[in-house]
Length: 155
Picture 1: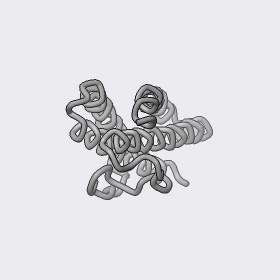
Picture 2: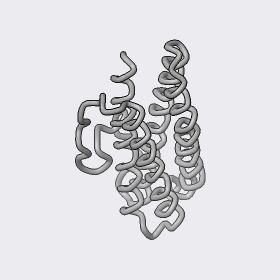
Picture 3: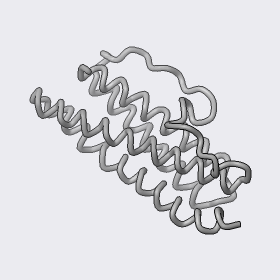
Picture 4: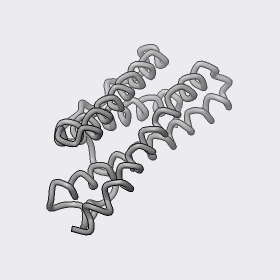
């Protein structure tokens, strides 16, 4: 995979993660922490997207537009337990957020490795600034799963 292709994939994944975060925030307005933090984390995705576009200097093809809830295929099959009630749906959405952020984290790591191999300090700096926030997004989703799952799965 070329650096440009990897940047395009990162941009598209950031766009999808941001859309999913906005969808979760909009669907769960009554859960104030979920709503407000998910909106903030979606803003990080927008910043990452803009930084990727700037680093690519116009070399990226137009990415697929976001479509529908979560914009993009769900990572893996739908979990059989995490649907049916609003609380369980929230757990399923948080699970998807976590999986997307972890997958995105792997690609940030790949970009860092490509940047080192090709001696591209600007790409290494990009990965160094965006990757930690992606890890924080994954940790937040994972923490919410840990907090909410005991009460929502034992009903």
